[in-house]
Length: 264
Image (cartoon, rainbow, N blue to C red; front, side, top):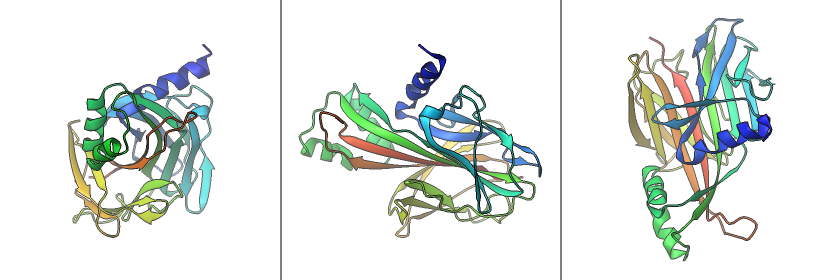
């Protein structure tokens, strides 16, 4: 197997039922410094780092101000992101994977996934549609963002045109977060109402805790955060899909993630 194909297979394998996120090696860098980040797949904010593999993504760029800069790299580069910061302020790193296919060999695993991600109704719908409990097929795509402060870190997160995304409505590096970090969860540019947002929090000692919140009628949720901690917010969309001979998936999942840190 060619090296590029091998890397692609390695990335596809572990991603089946785990979070995917952009993990900056530093959430704040000096003006004129370098942005360095891994692409990670795992659980509870712990996971393996994967390489820069162009066939595995459809978008990988850094937004600063009104400018989008494609992330440069060669196949196999790790960390996947290593580039000079294109300016000073708040850098928004954006990564969209290609679509992957997944088969659940165990019905119980599919049930646990649906319930854990806040979709207990999916189980009833699956059965009501007369779909088999064996070899449940799904296709999925990941939509990741990360906020990195460059220099003063001034600026704001914004909608970046992903099919689903989490938008921070305050700047974690510059604003007062005593009341929490407000975020908005979107699908096709519209607010997701009563959507589950899972928040993974890493403390300075390396310990990780997990909490969750649900969005309001405007798609907003308040995330409780603390100085000196780093975060991964995750929200999943589950859509019904009509199985065909060409595309046998019964479900489609769309994963949005946002990583950031809160300075001391």
